[in-house]
Length: 344
Ligand SMILES: [Zn+2]
View 1 (cartoon, rainbow, N blue to C red):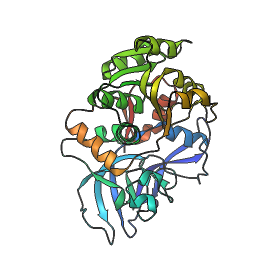
View 2 (cartoon, protein in one colour; view 1 turned 90 degrees about the horizontal axis):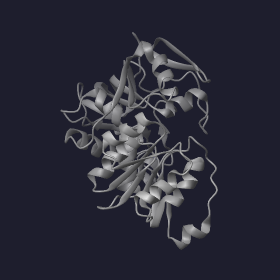
View 3 (cartoon, protein in one colour; view 1 turned 45 degrees about the vertical axis):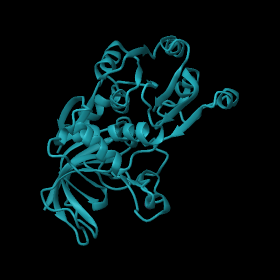
View 4 (cartoon, protein in one colour; view 1 turned 90 degrees about the vertical axis):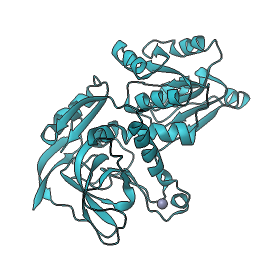
């Protein structure tokens, strides 16, 4: 037996992706094999394709970390799961034994690994994963919806409910509201009672943010966008910035903050080195908070919110496995507004 899968053969922009037959995955002790029904494509997958991650990746590798599907085979020592169970998969794999796992903080596990990078992921018909990474899919959430929100949606959930909890009445600035993290953050902040401002570099992206529930939008391609944010808040500034871009954008977010305000950040596509002015940081009691991935409880919360209609996916396009190359190209073109999902 074998299965169809996409393998990254060599790095580049574009890199070499090969569709072919590979051996069937086998469930080791404590693992299950999942029949992949849908797998979201993320910017993380592009970074891996380009070889730009600050961690070594051994090739060939089957990418794809945002998996939903059905349990197909249960390995020895696995309890609580059976064939046919509908699941989403936590892509931050964790050891379950270190001091951070012991207190439920799987995302900062000392032995953390990423599904689809450190081991084969979901751009394949089947994938073996640790049973500890499974989250039950609510019966009224379909596979494509799950695969379009599990990663970015739960990243935003982790940021806005765990790392920098939103309070009723807060002003929240969401950078890049048309992105996966951004569009989920707008909806989550709104549900938590915040006034939401979002940024976008095009009319289409700003309209998308407004459609997700942003009260105001600013043009991030304009030089003076932080001044626009201050103007909208009556010069006060915002209580929280949800940031995932880094570089100069992160540095400028400090000028958007009210006294006591927080920037929570989960990405650095625009640059990993940022200069920081310490005087306003301590005088205004600002906080800069890092956020990495998610815990299973964040995925469970995200899927509960989806089931309750509080969080809606925005799927740009669904591609079959054979068109994974086209899906990568579409995401790289930056013309995509909404989620790109592969259905093996
Ligand atoms: Zn651990």
